[in-house]
Image (cartoon, rainbow, N blue to C red; front, side, top):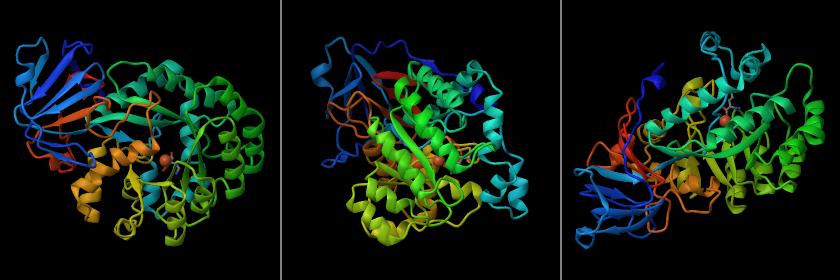
Length: 416
Ligand code: NIG
Ligand code: FE
């Protein structure tokens, strides 16, 4: 399997000392001021960026470690703000059904889709799930992801959702892999013994209280879409989640405009994702309510669905981020591929696309330690990608291979 072929070579550099990256070809910091930095060097101390400098003279005689990046470019570490990290099995057979004209909803009605992955995931032990997750994180890191949101949602019972949350928790503490924001998504679909009403009741009376008690989730997410959780059911689950201290996220209007975007605006959730069929009126309400729109172009790409009109959204100055939506129906771990889709198929500039997967994504998916991420500036977490090319635009120009040469991850230098 591809992920197993990856060898991570960690340099012996300790992350407790100062490291100077120098001889930088170009650097896109994503800072408001001085975005395309003229700086030629970055000083890193512990897990933070200490300074951006024109020269390394002041450190010449210090005991800092020097890393010559040989004229390569540097961009912030990518933030994958929407990923269904943990599940087992695969559903590649469903492609035949799509070829026969079956929609995502029809495949789900036939017992496929999310429910098929739930069956496969429940059969697998926690250790195997851990190793599946670890491999996926290595793969994401290879493509420059330094921070990732990981949803549950393939357990769909209190016991199985808690099991997935605890595997994600274990993955959080692994060194030299992307850091994780953990999202409980028990409201992803229902198992055959439930209706959406009866499962919503069970979530409210049992699953959510147990999740809150476990303290394992940072956010809650609901699949609010006609055919899945209704606007009313979603509202009940999200309000109770917020009351319990969780941040809110939503899947809305993926296949049709079902009112999910309206609810997102009303509840002022952090991010409303997919949103491919949300009306312009609702988009404006979401904007006014401070809701980030999370576009997931990989999903219509994998489903062969109509392509959303991102350009229209761009013209209205609606804030949005982009992410992979990695899931059994969308095997995309590469943020650079998402950037390539936006740039080559939507006419977005490499700069705007990069903003979506760095500083924009950071707004809806913050770090729990409060450190700023998605930008290169003093005080921010030391997460950045050293690209193969001297041109920073290269980050989204090689859809079928990683543009990343090496990474500074939380102050530790990682070479592949
Ligand atoms: O975001 N749409 C809902 N959830 C996922 C797909 C999950 C699956 O098909 O397994 C998504 O696309
Ligand atoms: Fe999703």
